[in-house]
Amino acid sequence: MSPTTNPSSAYSAHGHVTFLGAGPGDPGLLTLRAVEALAGADVLIAEPDVLDVVRGHARASVSTPEPTIADDASTAAGIPVLRDAVNLVMEAARGGKRVVRAVAGDPGLDADAGHEMLACAAEGIPFEVVPGIAAAVGVPAYAGVPLRDAQGTDVRFVDARTASERCWTEVGASDGTVVVSTTLDAVAAAASELVASGRKPDTPLTVTVAGTTTRQRTWTATLGSIGQTLKQAKVLPAPDGHRPVIAVVGERSSAAQRDQLAWFESKPLFGWKVLVPRTKEQAASLSDQLRSYGAVPHEVPTIAVEPPRTPQQMERAVKGLVTGRYEWIAFTSVNAVKAVREKFEEYGLDARAFAGIKVAAVGEQTARSLIEFGVKPDLVPSGEQSAAGLLEDWPPYDPVFDPIDRVFLPRADIATETLVAGLIELGWEVDDVTAYRTVRASPPPAETREAIKGGGFDAVLFTSSSTVRNLVGIAGKPHNVTVIACIGPATAKTAEEHGLRVDVLSPEPSVHRLAEALAEFGAKRREAAREAGEHVLRPSERRPGGRRRRTT
Image (tube, rainbow, N blue to C red; front, top):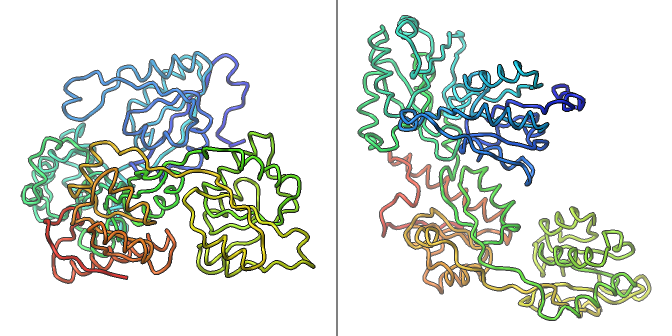
């Protein structure tokens, strides 16, 4: 049990409340204790933007009542004053529920959370606090702006919305670093307050909006020039000027070194909206990899998986698997693993039914799916992860060492004959069984179709010829500013046949190498812009018709 977890006896009269810091916006900054608390929550109470950060770690059955915003003036300013949050917390706790009250940043810096803690204490409801990374600390770190230097400068934190005249006077007289929490349209006013209080107009500052997320953007200026800088960048005036920002002020806050220290915004695909046209299960690991490069993956299924029209063949094969009909079973996709697993569950079987049978997987992703099922594959290609690569390592049938000469091959209805022909050539008998059918998925929402055709995506990853044909069929042809990345020559040929220019070709037929190739393309593109002294723009920000380089 975690040392911060209250004993179960504490729930006898009342529930329990965990006040949890969700951090500044990046879900990866949640602490291990936060994830543990979320997993055990009966009720999760959070503002919508915070709920988006933490919801994925809670149970599917968790209740998520939404606090209402009660103050009209605060609503207009983008400051949620939550009148009923404390009532929601108390009502759930009185009902014996395990409540997680998640707030942005750190609960210790949230006045509403402090009020709610006092209410719990007054009523004898046990609670705990799980600290989070405060925006005033996390955002500068992501912006590449250290708050202290080797000389150990003082750091002051100011909330411009509640700062008193005395507060401005004190930080204005100091030569330390000042971290100001404010809004985009109030930055210039905060800068003027500091100048009026004694700071020099040429004092450097950085302003970061949407910090720690892939929407993050940072501007470097001085106290005297920040208003003009934001106007020239066409950021202000804007209807969404109430967005919260973190401004870091000070001669020793390393703003001048941001070009070298801006690690987050310098990721090769930072902010790129990348279309991943695969099924959601297949896209998960690829999307995670794209996020590590700073991209924003958007998964659009182009293929739907359905059971075979006549299930009898699959049923006979699974029964034969149990009765010893096969020496090998070969899985050529995650969907094949899923189809067999579902059939096993239908018959009340589990991974133990594979005892005595050799198992092959076409690649690492399929192997991982098998391991999750409880089956460790005996054969995974050492080279190319494809049917051809599997055949390279597949042993020929030997009547002395192989008591059975038959292979069970559960596959899609549109699978090629490469593997079957190769296994027969090696001396094996093959039961080539349709385990599932692949059909064209339903069209994505109109907004997504418009973004595809109108240049709203920066790149699209095609992992097979069918993804090209199906995406064009259900959503239309990607705009000519969109970077087209293909997994291999056959897929690239199909893309070109559909009128698409291929910019990136994976050096190996692997989705992970394809993502790496796109990241390398983005890095070269970013470096070329910097060498030319140009602002780094995403492909979707370029004018239509611009020429593009091809990389392999």
